[in-house]
Length: 158
Image (cartoon, rainbow, N blue to C red; front, side, top):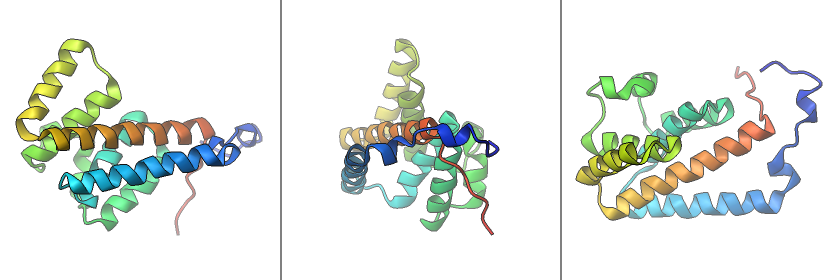
């Protein structure tokens, strides 16, 4: 998006309601703890964050979470093919299950598809892992919407 005077008219809801945004950050912190308790490292969490942000087309969150993913040890190759992850063998069964569940949480498909996604994920993830992945996706969806509604800009890096 190019910078325009209209862009400046958008309300950054995170800045307008900082207490609410801080509560959202606290939720994200609790979910990171839950993810660790479920056995997911930062790289795994960021992989889910990136995929959810791709689906939602949140440029700001992609900018933030691709960098965080790389910093957590994710490879450029896996990030490059993430939109087509089903067409590769680069992801473990556990990651495939998590990506399937995260996409289902994000897209909210029809009941039959959602049940199939859930049943597939359940084959590879425990109840604790299913909960953690679902919460990661729910929270990333919320942050995507905060950034999209607020029109958070992506700034060029040097």
